[in-house]
Each structure stands twice: as C-alpha cells, then as structure tokens.
Image (cartoon, rainbow over all chains, first blue to last red; front, side, top):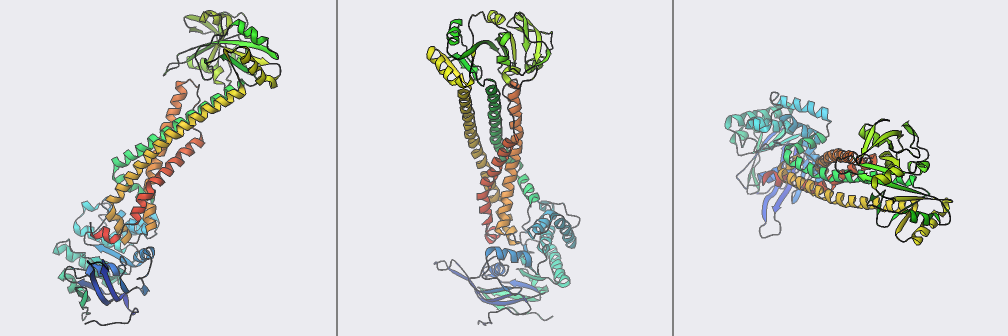
Length: 241
Length: 375
C-alpha cells in the first residue's frame, strides 16, 4: 500500500521526505533497494523516533534526512530547501546550520577536552576563538557538565560523553537534532536521563528531535513513531497528545 | 583553527618530534652550507679588492694564498726575469708561513714583507691601531693584524713565538676587513728567510706601470717562464665565482636531498595521522565542515610541523656558521643573512605544503557515513 503524496514540501515539516528511493550497488547483481518510495513529514518542534528491525533502512533514512547521503530518487526538503541536488559543500553548509548530530558511539575527539570538543564544532561554524570558548562553556552548562569542562572523554562516563555530544550538536543552533541510537550504548538509567535531556530540549527550546532507535522507552516519549520494515514505512502516525 | 592544528600535532608527540628532526636536518644543511657560501664570497670579495690591478704570481700547481697554499719557491732569478718584462713597475716578493688552523687550533699566518713596500700586502689606506709600522732592518720585530692580536690577547710590546723564534710586537694594524691581513702577522723578509731557511719566495705581486696592461703582463710572465702561474684579479674573480658557484651547487644538491627526505617524513606522518583520524574527520564533516575546511586543517598541521623544523634548523645552521667563523679565525666570515634565513623559511614552508597536500586531499575526501559507521 503506497500512498503517493505531492512531491513538494508541506508547511510545518522541519524535514519533508517526498517519494524517496535509495538503492545500494544500483545496476549490479548485488543491488539492494533499501528505501522504497518513502513519504514522511518530520514536523517542526516534534520528537520523532524512527524504529524498525535491523536492515529495515532506518539508518539510511537518517543519513538522507541528515544530508549525509543523497537519495537515488525523490526529494528531501530541509526547512523548505530541496537538498537532493545540492553539491557536497552546500550540504555541509546545511548540516552546519540546521542539523546537530548525536551518535551511538558519541564520536568525540579523544585527545580533546569536553570544552574543546564543543569549541571545535563552533569554530567549524565560523565562531571566533573567544566566542567559541564562551559559548562552549555555556552549552556544557546547559547539559549539566559545567564541572567537566576540562575532562577528556576517557575521564568521563558514557552518559557524560553523550551529554558532551549533545552540547556539540547544539553548538551551531540547529533546528533539528538527529540521534543515531543515542541511548544504544548506555544502561537504562543513564539512557533515560539522556532522553529526559533531549525531551527537555524539545519541549523547552523547541528543537525538533529525530532519533533512530531500538529503545522502546524512546517511542514512549515520542510524539510520533515512524516504523520501517524492508524499506517501507509501515506506520507513521502521530500519537494523540 | 590553528589552535586545533597545534593540539593535533601534539597528540603523537614522538612521531611529530621525529618528523621535525627530519626537517631540522635538511634546513640546517641548507643554512650551514649557505652561510659558508656567503662567507667564502665575502672572503673572496675582500681578497679581490686587495689584488685589484696587480698580477699575483706563484708556481704552477702551488695552490695559492687565497685558496690554500701548498708551497711555492720562486727564486731571485725568476724575479729578475719578470722585472725585465716591458711595463712592469715593480715586483714585490712575499713569503709566508702557515701553521695550524685545523679544528679549534688557532691558525698562524706569518708573512715576510719588505717594509719599504709593505703596503702592497697590507693596503695603502690601513693605518695602525697601536705601536708603529715595521721598518727596514726591524729584525726580531713583528707587526700583527687586528684579529691575530685579539685571538692571542696581544698588545704592543708583547712577545710572540713563531717556530721557536721569539718576536716582539712592534705594532698592531687597524681592522682592514681583509681576512688575509687581519689574521696575519708580518716580519721582515730577512727574518722570514731565516725562519724558513730558504732563499726563495712563496708569491710575487707584480705591479704594472699602467693598470690596463695587467692582462698582457700576466700573459708575458707565463710565456717567459712556464713554471709560473700569473693570475690577474679578473681571472681570480672568475675562479672565485666558480668556487662559490660550486659550493652553492653542492648546497642546493645536499639541501635538496635533505629537503626531499624531510618532506617524505612530513608526508608519512600526515598520511598516518589522517588514517588514524578518519572517524574524527567524518564527524567534522557530519557537523558541517566543508572539504576546504578539512584540507586547510591538515595543511595547517603539516606546515606547523615544517615551520617548527625550519626555525630550529635556522638556529642550528646559524650555530654551525658561527662555529665555522670560530674555527677559521674569521677567515671565512660565514653569515646567515636575512636572505638566507628567508630561503630556509621558504624551503620549510614549501616542504610542509608539499608533504601536506596529498594527505589533506585524502582527508577532505573522507566520506562521513563510511568513516562513522563502517570502521
């Protein structure tokens, strides 16, 4: 059951995915059709989780909506801008200005302190040295790490490292926070705290949060759960508030 | 983002240090040899000024006062022959004695002159710092150049022992900036003949009546006596230029090789660094770094390494130049000119650029998805 939507972006969507297909190894015997005619609106200001079994295409979908990957066909509108035909550097600019990434493995620079990890993102975003330092400290305070500014990742717990990653994701004032299994490496208690933080950022600061997850806790607090199976959205309903 | 470049090269301290050492070696070679070439050049220039308009005569294959002396014995009879050549105003014989000068040993150069025309050797405009000039019949007295006196802490009235014979310092010349004069001591020709136990001369200066005839007289001397080599300042300038050019060639050859090796070191280090940091580079791209940002970051790091090596190399090269000056008693005034330092910085800069461009390009091409997920 495929529902064709009009291939233009809908108002109110932070990210609008319209008729997206993604193939790997296209034209080869090993061709895989990972995403099949995906149409979904990620509403601005919502907390949305993408769920599905391994191999269902959820990570590929996240890469595409995060402008890390181009769809084979279809369009992706990010804040109203069609990103499916932009150059690599233009996509980098869009990521820098509108998206904050959080990863399962945190992906912090091990030799940098918490402060420096956030500063790096701010410097990439074009902030001056002094401004970057000041803002990085402020962001780490927001995520509850003002006592950890000068600690390196290996001196911090997983939960703390993920908080640094969240501070980094917030550094360039994105509209959307994209999480790739942000609680996947954490125990339940720590994971819940990270979710609380994300939920808080969503509720209080109006960030749109989209996370790929296996964690049923995430879907409990999400406004919308997009379920994928074999590259097809099987349910993408908004939950009643 | 130079602050991060600095942090990044500090991550693998020993690897960075070894890479820097590689560049230091290359730049040191360039600066040391370069300063040597400069020094030789200055040395030749001063010698050249002093031999202007004269013909310097020595035996063929004897080397020379200017280029290292291997012994020459010109007889009174040969002098008479030269005096007979048309246009020769006077022939001034000189004898000299060189001892030491290897390693840190102070080199002793003693020249036997005829005090009545000693200016031929010393230079007309050079006066005295203290004491009086050497005069005819001043047996047992010695007149010394400024550097000769300073390196031995001599004042007028002191005594100097040359080859077991003692001489009293009668006068100290003012600084002439001619290394041949400043580093030498002068005694009368009679004393020198006794000292060397010889009746012959090391070298002759032939002064022409007309300076335009210098070349012709030099040719005549060689035609008259085939055992003699007559060099004019023109020829000498050519020889000097040849020597300096050869040194420069060697410098660029050796420097070039060292620089290539150093550059390969930078290349190796940066390629390794990029490989190790693939994931981190992927994250940087994911959070919005452009290819250009990454390229610039890596090149900044490699240039930082090479400039560091360049600065230390200039330091070591200058020390080597200073060592050369001390070793030769100022005979080769090796100097690190701003031009040479500039060349060294330019070399190290291009080294960092060349060694950094390929890894930077590799880094810029890192696919964030691959780097983040599949490693």
